[in-house]
Image (cartoon, rainbow, N blue to C red; front, side, top):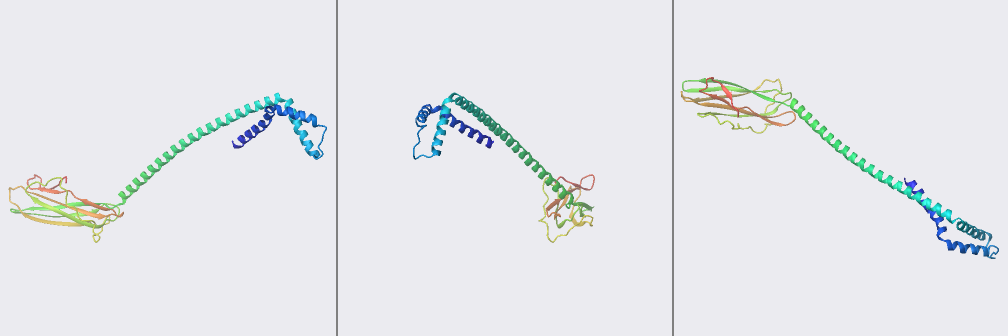
Length: 270
């Protein structure tokens, strides 16, 4: 496009020089008369070159005067052609600008699509990593094994919580806490059992397949029939998994109702 415009401008300049002959009608006539007067004279200080150059210029001016109409027509035609060329070039520039704008919109759209795809890929990678951690992390499970002996005036509740690792990696820094409650009224459902302290650096570790850790309990209290009473017990466990994530697990309240038809502990919803 640049060389095309340069060629068009050069042609316009050449045509302007030719068109100058039409504008300078009077100067051409005067120069011709001067040529007729001087054509047989030669100044003694002028050499042949200067005389020849003057003669050539005067000849060109005479030619321009004799062919004024043709030069004017050619100049007008050239200007018209140049105008058409300039218009075509301008239209081409407009089209190029429109195409560039379209390309820019498409580029922005593709950038947005790429960014969305990258975000989805990152989310997928995070979910996969989370699923991997969930599958490979340690998971503790607690079995509740009670034994209840109700006497004439005393009741003893013994047993243990057995803690097993049902995950795929080691649970370390295990810390165990718990509590129990004996009362004449039902436990308040919805109360959160006490949480043990943070994982204990000196606490034991438990690998999947190892024998369970045992957390025994032994409670004895006075009872008088036919008084109704309730006994509840629970434990909570904190530990670290392979990915160094602290976790806390607690059992529900296991509740024993002395008036229940089935004499056993029942897990509550707390």
